[in-house]
Image (cartoon, rainbow, N blue to C red; front, side, top):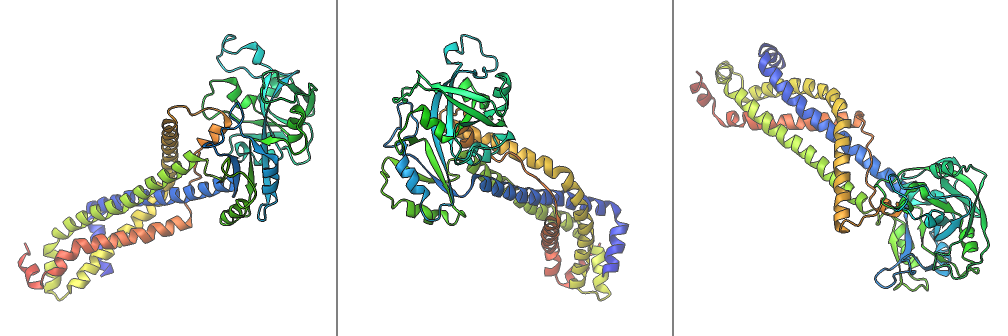
Length: 454
């Protein structure tokens, strides 16, 4: 049976090459989809690892609009209590501040004119105070990257991180001090001490805005992080009276987070004014891009399998129809229909092994390009959907950038798992197609087949 199958496919070279091409195209599509699917899962897992398992406390905007400039006003007592909840492994506290820079100016907006950027604001800095800048989602999400020096950490006093472009423009280096004083433009700073704070630069970071900024305050280049103590000094806060923009509390795993959140909700906190949200819930575009990418991959996989079965069945059916005389002769010499069907299966499997084997190289050639196309398409679609949902008001600042963050790339590689899955699926498709194509023959009696010999 195997020998007859080999003799037939080597003799009918044109038909063999056509079938080989069909299986090659199907296999290339299959192995590419399998590789992209695995890369997407790895990319999502890595992104979630960077975000970290845990939850955040912030204003409940339905009942609490925050400060006069719309920022968070989470009390220190609530943040400190949440940090002590059993199951919380570490926490990130964030405070916003505005200050006048005595020895530096903001980086101007590219293409902006003097009239578009009032000079009286070129030294006004909106910055963020944090106890651990390495946990900030701008860094964990990959929008910003530490280039030199170190991150801010617990216990720091009068330390800052600045963008490398900001430092270069103002002639500043690691170890230099950025002199800050309370701003006359900040209505929130009611306890202005009037005393300048010299904050030492301990690190430089890089990064660009994913969305083109329209104001210089939105630019990554004008982003500055300080320790919490610097904000407290500029705002002359008494100990325990400071307010936070928000705070994030990390747990050991995603599965442990709901239980820890339930414990946190039992604390004596005004839960009407403030709310807890699980990490990742504010990454709206990321969730949508993952879902859309999954749909595209499933469509590619399902389409490859369905089209493969249909095309192969049609091709093999035509192949069988053209071999009635051969089948009649085989039956007349005593060969059963089962053995004839087995020969057809052997022929398809031999060609299939060759076609699927070659598709490994085809997949390697196109999988990365297809994956990049999928990522670009879902990213653009997800951001557009988010922007449309906000009536075109999606900002270019770092907070908005995190909301609009999507899967940025896929490391598509074809390994042994994908090859094994390819052959497993491919063989099943071939067997299904052969069964469909020979079913009419199997239903007929030997006498019927003999009478149809031409």
